[in-house]
Every structure is written in C-alpha cells, then in structure tokens.
Image (cartoon, rainbow, N blue to C red):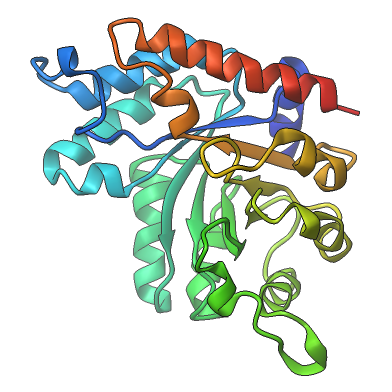
Length: 268
C-alpha cells in the first residue's frame, strides 16, 4: 500500500485506528472452541464488526506461530479475509543478518502479502534494508517502545547526550523514506512526541500503548499529529477482548467506535 492510499483511507474514515489481532486461544469466547478454526472465526467476527472504523489490522505473529502449522493456517485465512483497502501489519519484530532478513521479508511480503512488518534495528543496516527492497511495502522500525523495559537501552545516552532511540531514528532515515519507513513509538511516552516530531516530522508513527497500557488518543495527537495525520494508534486487548460472551464482536465494535470518535475529534 502506498502512503497516498493510506492517507486517503484515514481521511475517508476519519480514523487512524489500528486494531491488534493478538488472538489468544486461551482468551477467546469459549463457545468458539468447538469450531474447526476458532482463531480464524474470532478474527472474522472482529473484522466484520470493525472494518469500517479502522484503517489497519495488526496480527501479533507470536499468537499464531505458537500454535504451529494450524496457527499459520489461521493467520493466512485471516489475511485473505481482511479487506484489501485496509493496511496490514505483521507484528513480528524480526531483525537478523541480511540473508535471513530477506527470507523473513519474503515470508511476510510475498507469502502472506502483508503491507508492513515490524523490524528490530539492533543488528543495523544489513538487517533492515532487505525489508525495504519491496515496492509499496513498509518497515515499521522499533524506536521508543511502550513496555517498561524500554528504559533499559532505548534511553541510554550516546555521544553528545543523544538517547539511543533518537540515534536509531536518525540513522534509519538514511536507509528508508517517508513512503516505506515508519517508527514504533509508545503512547506511554506522551512527553516525547514533540521531540520525536522534530526528529521525524513527516514519518508515520505506529503507536501502541493506548487503552490497556494507559496511553490516550488526546495525549498522542496533541504533539504527534502531522499534516497527513502521520499516526496509526493501536489498540489490541481493549477492543478484541471488550466482551467475552456470544456478543463479543458487538462489544468490540463499541470499543472501536469510542476510539474512532475520539480520533475524528482530533483530526486537523
């Protein structure tokens, strides 16, 4: 998907909501477990209930690959079911030496046809650039994440006092562009968004941490929005597990709608 197509979808839906499909077999409603593919059935009902409210879906790959071949089958069926105009993110956090990264890129961009994949930058340029060689596909590079442990390395000062996450963001702009490179920046660091926008004013940011982790739409958009919105705010558990009974998809829609309405109010 091109940047222009993503921006057009945001404008049309008045939304920059990304829904994380972190589909845990131990958390989905029990009545689905008797079905042949309960993971796919859960995802299908969530997608049916929310696709008009969001601009992206983000399956977390760990929840699928942990189930072996059956999980990969559920993921492939989910990808086939997501409407083609919706941006898709493989939350895989891959990053390895060049030849291995190339195979990871083929997995997610060719075999499964994702629009983007999250990538870990620790191994440097040759672990990231294989993902950038695919037309109309995106790398979403981990920069300042929403977890507590992000303080362990990402804030570490480099020469001149620059924190490591800033060095990552600046260096990566030598590898990719605003049309194929995004950054992960957690909503649990709202005080950093003005600074981050000075580092990457035109890049899209994937923002986890809204909802269950305590971040808010308002705190992110206040300083994080740019002329194209430039944000994909993700909510996973707060939407997909909003209900546990047979009306779980209806409850998920209500949770997604509340976020979408907050986003519509924040759009410039």
